[in-house]
Length: 374
Image (cartoon, rainbow, N blue to C red):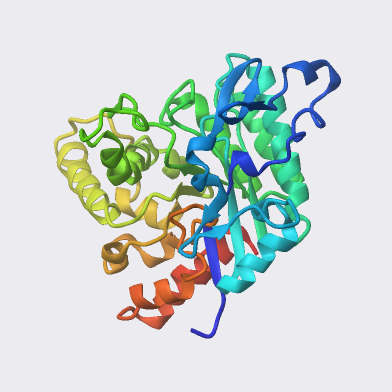
């Protein structure tokens, strides 16, 4: 292909963040309660009020020292993290033929504190750091902020603030939210997203509603708990997709754009077809369900306002027409161990070899540029 890629779902994980990100940024009266990095005999830990919300054990150093298909060392010889040193991150992007990256942060599960004010202050500090980091290369580094999930007024305030400091999107963790997304309490947030043009992303990896795994990282050997989670994780988003449509959220807020992060895409056509069929059977014909009254069929709302990112999904690529190719954005997942970096072009060339070049370019570049205004 004769163009660079747009990667719509890459990362800045906790272990790459500056050690003083919060202690240097939160107001003085909160400083002794701010997240801080602690050295332990087993590795580093991020703590807030002695609660551990991020642990990087020495026994699992490969997860934070190598990334991509080549096993490149994350820690550069200059003693800087490549993903959070702009020059080094841009070098990695250039090596991979990637023009721009959307940066998901590492606070997927939040700080797990029962203090909404402290959570909001710490999220504000992260959002400001992200905006400053991306200013080193506007248009190439596209950071996402975080929204509070325990107070709708705080979330609305923060999405307006993120728009003010130049962030194009934000992350919202539905599995930790004090009310589920279809609850009317969140209507002001969806309205604020539509008003500001700041899309809201929902990323996998932080929970489920109806499926619970006991201890996916330390379960009994040979019982498949972790393997099951890894296989089914993208499907965490099916309930979210349906709830945003069938509760009427997308109907009431036509300028609100929802992104399913790292959700993969092969399952989406099935969900869209089933949602349309059941809405027709149970709501339109029988009037026996609790769905909102919609002007369009459910799948039409997805095609108008929904987006999903994927890394490697050859089945999904061949089903693009059933979900709308305009709804899908490719990503490299840099700098995770399972990232396709630095072989992104080889990967997508193989995956899209039988796909219409116009559709290919939409998915690999144009959809991301359009959504994030890069």
